[in-house]
Length: 80
Image 1: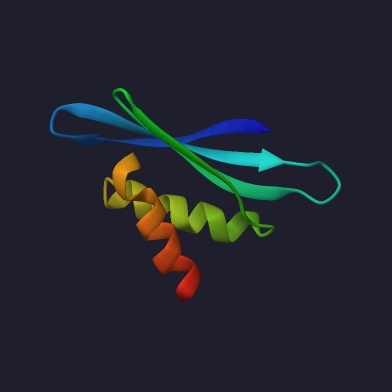
Image 2 (image 1 turned 90 degrees about the horizontal axis):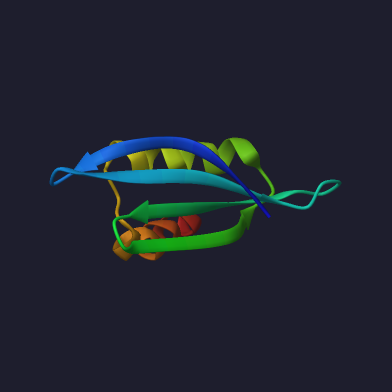
C-alpha cells in the first residue's frame, strides 16, 4: 500500500496530515490516512474511484477532521 500526501490543516495549534492510500496496481482501491500528533488512523479500500476519495479528503481537510472522527465521517459519506 502506498501513501501520498494530500494536504494539511491546523487544529488547536497542531497540524493534521491527510494522505491518499492506494493498494493494487491493475485494479487499485483507494483509502485515507490521517495523522494528528500521537493519533493516526488508516482506512484502506474505501472505493475504487480515486476522484471520490480525493473529494472526501478535501472535505475532511476543510473541516479539519481528526483521526478520532474519521470513521464516522467515512460511514456518513458512504451512506450518501
